[in-house]
Length: 78
Figure 1: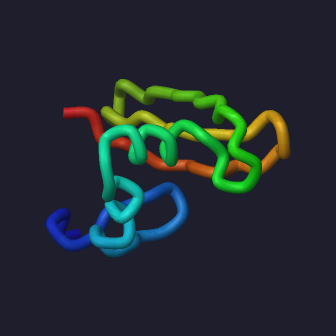
Figure 2: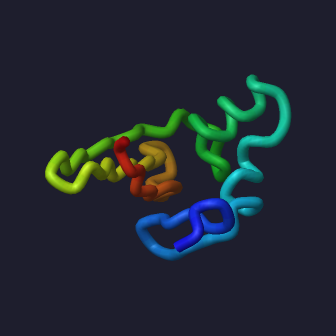
């Protein structure tokens, strides 16, 4: 996998431009989109599970208010 062009998520590989589109705008806008539900605007609750033997952390986010799971991403630890 060429890391410059694709990002591996828990479900599929997506183009970097699409994955990073949520990070466009001011710092305040980016933080707002990352930490709040896109559907109802409530605070998201994050959970992280780390597998140290494989150097991976699984991040998931869920909205407690409306119950949707908004994010599930695997991060590689370096």
